[in-house]
Each structure stands twice: as structure tokens, then as C-alpha cells.
Image (tube, rainbow, N blue to C red; front, top):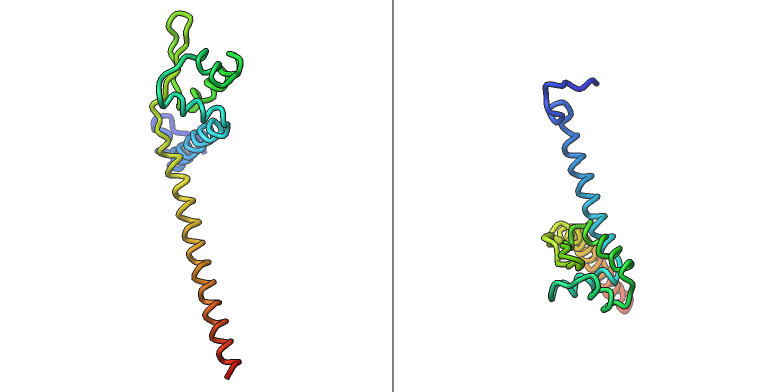
Length: 141
């Protein structure tokens, strides 16, 4: 289907915008979870939660090279979890503006799903226990 150049893309393909938003959200979640998957990066976030720090300070604290720390900070920065600013020869890191609300909501939706499944399983187990007790009483009589 040829695109009409006079109309915005979503006027021609309404699902295009939705699909693009879903793809953006997935990429966003992928970047966040990839950044959070490493213990060192989680430690960096904890450290920056207390105070801003230079890459040198972070490298010393985590016993790694400057190059290694720059790579970790870069991953966190790409995910929007950390921002850096260079003043002279010092690059200072601080927490980014993102608060992981989307990620927390995604996790919460799965927590609710599993809670509901476990609640149903508990009901089934209780039902089977009642049946078993009832059957045991019938056999004794």
C-alpha cells in the first residue's frame, strides 16, 4: 500500500504508532534490565544514591581499571540511569532522572499474575485436603 505523503504516517497505518511505542518500550526495558543485570552496576547505582562520584572514585571503590569503570558507567548512561559531566579532566557521575517506574510496573504485573496463580493453587490444595479428610471419614464408618 503506497503511503500518502500529505498525511501523517499514523493516519495511513494506525497500528504503526502503537507498534513503534511497543518496540520503544521493549528496547527501554531491555536496556534497563541489561544494565541492572550486573552486580557492579547495581553497586554503582547504590553508591551514586548516596553521593555523586567521579569515575576514578568509583573505579577505586570497585577495585577495577578506569577503562572497565567507564564501560559500566556507559551502560548505565545508555539506559538513562546515570548521567555524567566532565569538568576539566574529571568526569563526575550522578543518578539519572529515570526512576525505573516502567520496569517496576512490568515486574508488578508479573508478581500479580503469579500471586493469582498461587492463590488458585492454594484453593486447589485445600479442596483436595478436604476431599481426602472426607474420604477418610467415609472409609472408617
